[in-house]
Length: 89
Image (cartoon, one colour):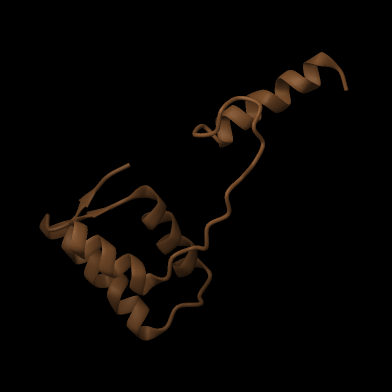
C-alpha cells in the first residue's frame, strides 16, 4: 500500500469517525432506535437530534412504518412547527 493510499484511508477514518482517535478503525454498532423510542425521548427532552431525524427519514422512506408510527412522526413534526421541540445537531 502506498503512502498516498494510507493517507487517504486515514483521512476517511477521521471524516467518518471523528470521535475515534486517529489510527483507530473500530466502529461501534448501535441498533437504530424505533419510532416509538424516538417519540418518547424527543418529547421527554424537548429536542430532536440529527440522528433521530435521520432514523425517522430512513423509516419513512423505506415504507415500512405502520399507521401509529406515521401518526407519531406527524405529531413530532407538529411539535417542531409549534416550537415545542427544538432541532439540535
